[in-house]
Length: 51
Image 1 (cartoon, rainbow, N blue to C red):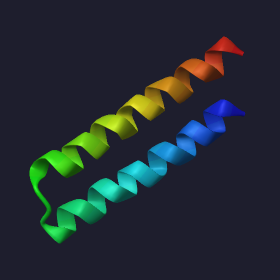
Image 2 (spheres, helix red, strand yellow):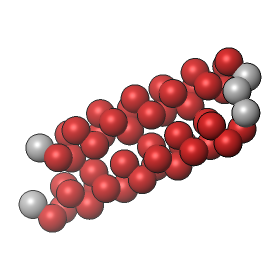
Image 3 (cartoon, one colour):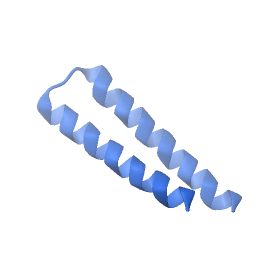
Image 4 (cartoon, rainbow, N blue to C red):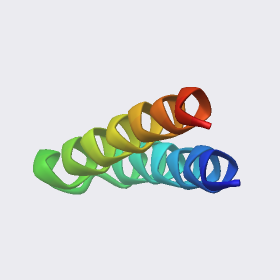
């Protein structure tokens, strides 16, 4: 169950990366969202194998 929620969170964060880049916001905003999206994907991947 947690892995599904984390995959969804990663999708939302990745959408934020695309949106922030198109809006021309500072680089640190979309880079930080990208790092958080990658962390959520890794956590979801680890949760799928821990169950």
